[in-house]
Length: 128
Image 1 (tube, rainbow, N blue to C red):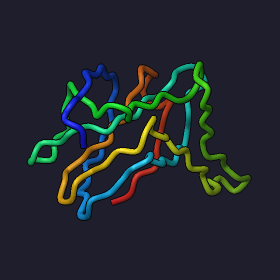
Image 2 (image 1 turned 180 degrees about the vertical axis):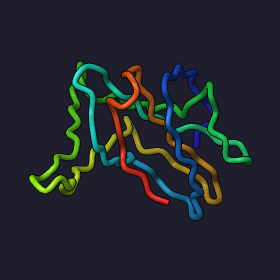
Image 3 (image 1 turned 45 degrees about the horizontal axis):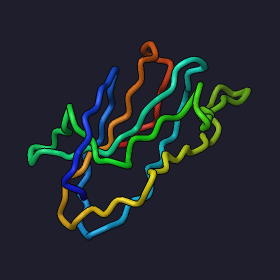
């Protein structure tokens, strides 16, 4: 990871912290959306993370801020429902970074997604 961090703003954030066991190069992050906004874009960033697993609230790793959705060159599609009311396989949307990011071994990193859209306009699938 680079030592130079950029300031960030956020509204309505969701984050996931993960451990990178082996030194890696990340080129992007894929998310599966259940619903997407038709009016508001969404932003994803990689952020430095404290040893307690909390992502920085003010800084992000340069080159990892990606904005997608309405008003951008990247459109996102959400899952559709079948006639039985079950979701079909949702398409993955990959937020691709401006440049590859090197993450050292044994690092805690977080990705954060946020938007100014009203609650419920963006819904992503999660797992435990």
